[in-house]
Length: 219
Image (cartoon, rainbow, N blue to C red; front, side, top):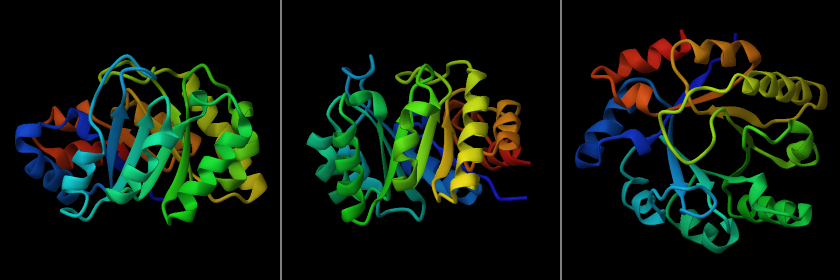
């Protein structure tokens, strides 16, 4: 059985105690650290930009997993690359042109950063099929992007299954990540469907023992 990793979202961390919260998830077994970047335009919320990533990216040993929920990823891409992103995931729905998506994937990878593509709950897998061969990661949103603490949308399980099937049949290398409403019950459904990375925010950071919270997602 393959090892499933956890990517805690610092959107739910205590920013007055961020250094401790990052150390707690690292020593709790997390491999990734998820950065939810929101611009107040693509999604109806504002979070933080590249300066937060820059300040903390070199201060820990986790993989910097950056999720751009913004309308113009091209405009800010260099900032996130220079700030230490290891993976940059942008949204399919931010573009109207397939060639622009291919171009951004190439641009990310040319800078030795892994390229990810994310889809909202209403977007079918078929819409991104042509990009899968080029991707390092596919992020399935299991809630509407923009706010933490939402309930898991179960149609995302079928999307994960489809992505896993396509990956095996095509011998592709992308990782499958899921974000939204992940807890110790919904994580099991995603793992059974073939997910590689579970993003969790409030489920982990609302608990005193981060190690137990992380382990409960994957055991």
